[in-house]
Length: 287
Image (cartoon, rainbow, N blue to C red; front, side, top):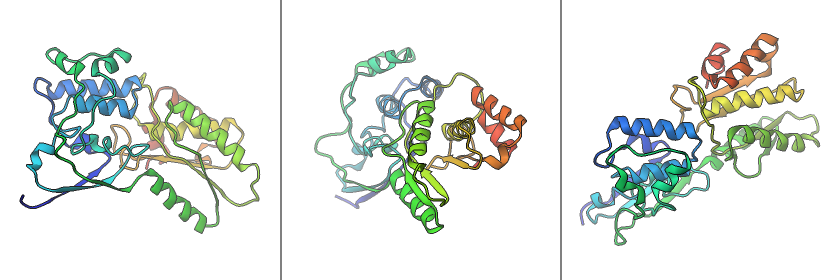
């Protein structure tokens, strides 16, 4: 059978290991990816498209094992830890929940000419005789637990949002702020830290530069100001180290940097224009 194979998977693998189906150019793939990011599709829906249009994803690499034993270790960035979706599951066959054509129609998208046959595909790649055990090592909940312990050792009272933030970004901000306000009511003077994780979506309507985490940090800071909070720090980051098409992992905003009316006006303008990277860079608030 030959030597065994140890597979290491983490968030971000979908973008690093690519082999599009025949007839799909690199440019076609880029265009469709940008459209998916802009239309507000969920990460699960994006992964379904990626799997359908790839020879590798969704179990496509199983045949390369040639019956050799394999074992996969996984760092998950997927809410709910569906291991078939981490890195789009190159060693994990997955049958689509719906035809690709139905998903694309929902967001008024279409495939490049010549790829119409992919739209009705509903078969998993790989074979029933091939199975690779997957072991989850850590996920965003583990990251939150580490943060909780660290802040607690520094004397803070720490709370966590119940569940995951998976809605449209502005709704996620509202939910987190409402939950925080309710939780803080019985505070006793300790420093307060409130944490949450998830995978919110942001519909893009401009050509600004930024990412979901930068936008979340800015919008939450603005909402705290509007709610009368005078002293706070807000941070939001991607656990894979990148946020959108930028060199930053997210943003860290302090009320100390938002005291004057001009800066607050610039903050709200950055949110409206979805141009949060330049604003955060201008006040030294990039992560």
